Image 1 (cartoon, rainbow, N blue to C red):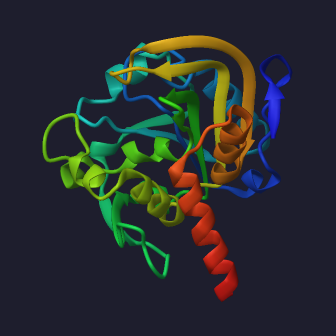
Image 2 (image 1 turned 180 degrees about the vertical axis):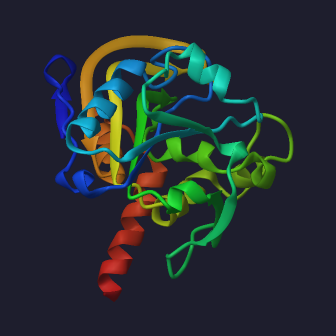
Length: 244
């Protein structure tokens, strides 16, 4: 679904009322404000909506590719919400999770924080970022959930995963970590240049929301972007339906 930013009021699905733990994955790897990262205003809207229907534990989870602690980043971004636990991926306990695809694209198992598996509802929230005619939205936002100790051979990089084909990795990650909801915060469009925190900003005044694949696909279709990880996910969904 697409909303104008001025008209957007986040309402959690009814299933959240029965949740004991809700995990929110923001885009917060850098101490720089929206549109580089998820805005504190968007997170506040999500959290307040959850609180209207549930007393569930609410967790913010983020990691950084170079292993820099997330606590100073959370503070710089204004992520100071009452009764919300902020976690750093590198401080979590990791478990190995099987990819449910019969034929994984690149990665048969992923090491992930165990707090994800113990959460009842999972939300990924990302700003609208484009890269040379492509884009990265709620599903690529999940990449920084993975522990750098397992996947980064040098500080600041995901060489092991990129060497496998990052779009294949993202498709595998989508099926392995079934997040329930994806939100693309598109009050502005951020066209990234060489560095992840550098680019051109344009007002856009939209919010996209839905299951993560649906949300990302709707953004791509609206902007006319060709995104490989979405094509791979679609092909796997078709194959799984044919085998069902």
